[in-house]
Image (cartoon, one colour):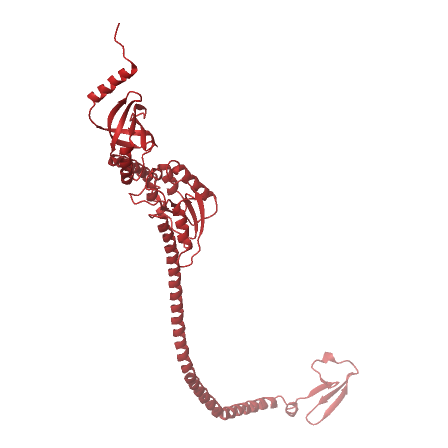
Length: 408
């Protein structure tokens, strides 16, 4: 009869074989399909996909015990600006472990953050290239802040300390400017960032009019910023019709969201300062315009007053000159009046003499003296014999007398 083993014995053989054949630590590239913490330990599910079909071709479990995880995690998050999450590609240093009761797993002794940074940079560059190819990468930069940018839509977590800091900074500005803010709550860390912010943007677009949008995330950790490096969110922000300010609150390389927004600042309070400074620049410009208008008006008034003063001094002199000329003309006219009257009287007397001579030629007595006679009927001159009727009495005047006759 063949020798048989208990399960424990067989598993011990497997463990010994693995420990003998794989005594070293190995660096392995993999994608995280799951990552969770429990009692200070980190449990991961590793996967490798076919590059063409994205079909899983290898799977394995991995564990990072608390004594290592407490050191690895902070360093990884500080370096990458993110925490480990599903879908992330990682480079792990592992060694094999087979436990008789719990089976096989890879034990993680280190994680290289530079590998993950390279993969993140590659994905981010792919998104950037896509946005540029679509022609939307710089659309936000072409927008201008309204002159009076005071109605602000805020996308943030309602409980985030950064949101309160932002509102307090606006309210307590040293110039007394008044701002109206409305919060559109959104998830700003972990899963759901992309969908939550896109939904908030849709509510802003479909709601009342705002001068700009501020996306702030102050108060949270610097890890897990992958939600701000997605194509869908970047496209929504790039195509938004009013300026968007991002104050996500991290010092690492810009996220894609920062790149496509109108203006990127580091913190929520910096976003508030930007809005205050913008309004202050508008106020300064208005004051400068007012001062220039006042100065220009004063200069114009001064010039007009000078002209008026000069004119007031000139008018009496001109008036005196005109009066002197007119008086001279009047005096000359008065001097000439008697002479003109004498000439006119002489001319009229001569004309009257001529008329008198002409009238003498029409004197009837002169005509009678020349041998002419005048026949009258009822006191009127008879010019046509047809005017007379038989029995009419006519009167003929001669130089020496009058002859009366009866028409037969």
